[in-house]
Amino acid sequence: MSIWELNKALNDILTTEMPTLGLEEGLEHERIFEGLDKGTMVLLGNPAHPRLRATLVGQPARVKVNANLGTSPLNSCLHTEMEKVAAAMDAGTDTIMDLSTAGDLDEIRQKMLESCPLPLGTVPIYAVGKNLMDSERDVADMHADELFDEIAKQCQQGVDFITVHCGLSKRGAELALKNKRVLGIVSRGGSMLARWMVENGKENPLLADFDRLLEICRPYNVTLSLGDGLRPGACADAGDAAQWEEVINLGELARYAHEKGVQCMIEGPGHMPLNLVKGQIEGIKRLTNNAPLYVLGPLVCDSTPGYDHIAGAIGGAIGVTSGVDFLCYLTPAEHLTLPDVEDVRAGVMASRVAAHAGELALGRTRALAREKRMNTARKNLDWDAMAKEAIDPNLLRKRRESHKQEEVCAMCGKFCSVKMLRDVKVK
Image (cartoon, rainbow, N blue to C red; front, side, top):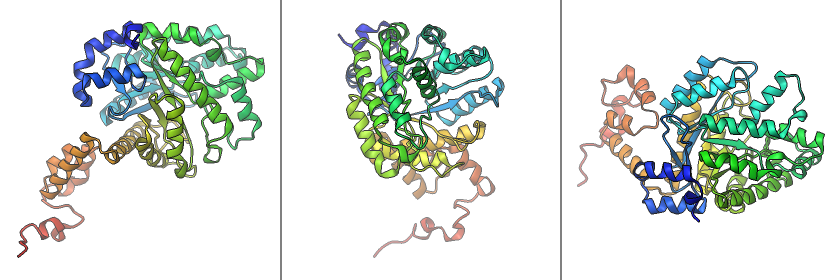
């Protein structure tokens, strides 16, 4: 059976959204159906999400960008987070993830769902962890039912995709801890589950009771973003046994979930030097049956605090040419603090640049056409046309403001090379 025959919610969304999706992505309907049926594409969308704008993820659909938002115990303000939602949407993000760990998490999540028609993702174990810590209980005291109940609640609220670290096994956690990784386990959800497994001597409940998770998510078409709990948090840790043990598990889980009618994406691979990006991406795609790959970065160096959005965009562009389908942004605040509104905008733009650069290298029709239009506009010194094709038209206009009446830019002025040869005729 096809996945939409197994998943009624997905079928209902497809029936409504297919004409729009085909037009937006420049793909024939048959190509979209084929990708969804093979599991190389996913359609993010929960019918319970009000005013939903369903989004297709998986090449050759356009590479998508996600913006992470959310409160922290050191900085918690609902109004600020809603401003960030607006800024991310204005900057052109395709999805948003709420990673809140402080404040009224249900209220924050509901406000985001109401105000943002884009697919919204969450990490349910964060809410469970907050409840445990607020009650002065250790993470190791978590009951499996608490986690599954939280997932069910968020599905009912309208969340479209969830990060669940199902591939993090007890063996994998022990490998990461015993092999003296430079930065150990850097995933927050991964570290919580690792602590739970080690302290209790039990297998990850998301892995041990995976079928329960599928039964919860299928009626809402909630896509599983299979989390990379053992992703390298330092370039020196890239490609170790713990990382690949988890990737193998993720591939098997994604295949099984797809057979049961639940869509899956794969997360990874974190930090790694530039020379490993292509091989890692291709290896992950192969081991996970070409399921859509959702990446943070990859961050190609660790010494760029304040500029990690640039380090991540470099890795992201190369990743796209190797098969990445979905870029999770990094902001200038990464590894330092909670991003503000300007950080959010900068992060979205950096990832959009990476996505476009990668698609251009792949020869995608829309990317090539955009470049051609931009080049024509530059040749004609047509600044309005340039703004239309720019990733960030507002920034272009802002930088032009002081000399916007001039035909040329302020760098060259009368020495404009375009004007210099405009009237020259070669004899």
